Image 1 (spheres, rainbow, N blue to C red):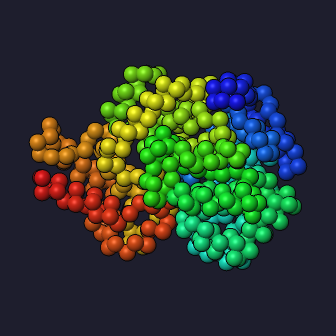
Image 2: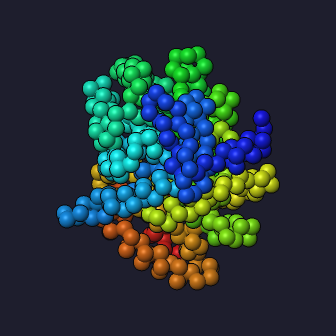
Length: 448
């Protein structure tokens, strides 16, 4: 079956209505039920689950300040979004013990447990980055059940196993006995599908596919970073092109979940020159819709995650996935042109995941990168004194930088300790990028 035949069947014919996950207990296959909104659905060929093509990523829940001034999740807002998402057909929710400094799972559990367990799929992870002992790993696993208020996980992931390749995988999951433990848990029905999320090189990925092919470890699904930029333009040394990852998984029949379809929001707010070209083609559709449609065009994709912080992106995404339109071959060529243009901008490849935080020296790493990237995408990047309105752009950047990032948390306070490097899934040389931005700020201060 070629791509167009599949899209005709699954992109249109497999549209379900409403909340789809009826019957998703550990021993049953899921079915689709009617509801108020159409939602594109993909069937998991391994388990038979009917999964909403749009999945809710729980890494970017809305935050507020509590009485002590601490950043906490706005549970009321989360409940409202989850209620609306489920009502309109979203049934896949992805979280981790590591998200939002440990707060994400509990918030997700509070919101989801107000709904029938059969109306949603839970995906969470064994994020044992800091303590890889069997005791600590099992505690993290068991704590996730308590936080999520459930007695089984539909999709359980080994979190980001590409970093460090096979050696790191062996330490985190094999030598400590966790793979044997998780396989036993799957046999008991507490895990329905066992897979992994991946950030790493082609060599690393190939080693995990060899495990699958040999039967050493069989993967029920895989979560990869995929978007129209990383499709062919990822950093080949540290991150593999999504085109390669996708086809390797598709030919093995391994269901694919997509993370970072918007590159941490950067493909929702692209540089003005690129957004104009998109709007000329589709004036009534959002910039983000292009990125989501790109991922959904490929038939091996089971679910596309979106980290929605408020109702606005949720409503826009429901519009995109509620009447899903795959890209034509000509539109795919257009997206490749946009990807090439994106690579020409001096952006920092930060997805705002905040894995690098907290910085031991208090640097607001994701905030600095976001402020810098926004100036580029919005066309307010001060380049040189010869630039039109340079003085105005220069003053605007410096003023907004001081407002957005407290002085003691700015780039010039980075001492280069490199404690952040091992935590970055994008393999960004964070100290190097902070120094680059600091030099840029100093140049603006000197008026150069």
